[in-house]
Length: 374
Image (cartoon, rainbow, N blue to C red; front, side):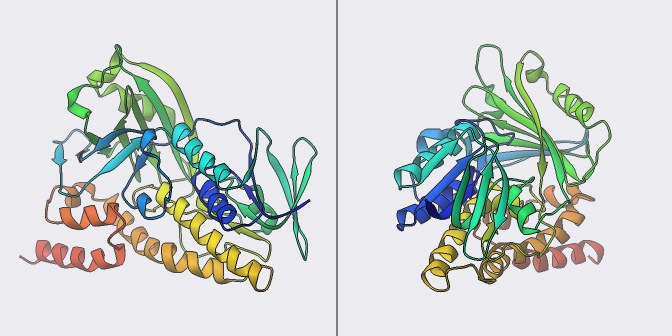
């Protein structure tokens, strides 16, 4: 059997692409190397930008809704902001991703889980996906949604070897009760790690905590994580049940993301925000774009054109270019920006996907100019 599309990886990007294509009548195979539900090292904060591209009900997976955030720099004072319009839904990725995959299957996609794709061979009219079990699946198009070490990207010669790193844990307070201090807001701390931050995200009965850096190397990374965790008294009597690291493919600009038979989405396409480290909304968005381009391509030429890379660059990466500039400034002088409430509205717009970095930067230039020349 030859599938219209084979999607490798059942994260948000892969599930979004598979669901949309199957719903439109394409014979779609979704391959996931692990058994679902599976753990993913991630803060699990869904911004309102996610709702623009998700077309299924995931409300049962939302554990808490955050309406504010607290920021600090090293041992300096804390600043808490609760700007109007801010709403971030806290989920555990194992449950949210599983729900997205269930929607893909309900839409008509075939799911094979617990089998890893180990190679993709691109031909003129189709591509072959080989698994570790020795099976081979044929598809007209392959969507690489298999993360930072993407097998599909390797096959297409589209790999990106520049990554940041993160270490995340799931910590359960004794008694299973979240203190009121952090029940409706998230916490970010800067200055403990170069080019990054530490975070605490409240969930239903536990916290997701972690550190990340945009740098590819960080000496004593695990020790920094432990030091960050020890600074909060309410975590000292808690039980850490999971701790896991991952590579973070921060976007670093334009690059090719498809061949005639293979395209990359989500982390495989390095679609992690260069400033915030957020990737879920962009992963889902890229899955939707991939589905639409594939549908159009198979109806016309039968193979992918450069339209996919163009659409991703125009709709996502172009604004990431501005985010990279802002990240260089922010991680050098974080308190300079967040200590002012001047841009609360713009920050909420950026978080909600209603604003663009390119529109925010001129306003920031003007403000910084006033600081230098009062």
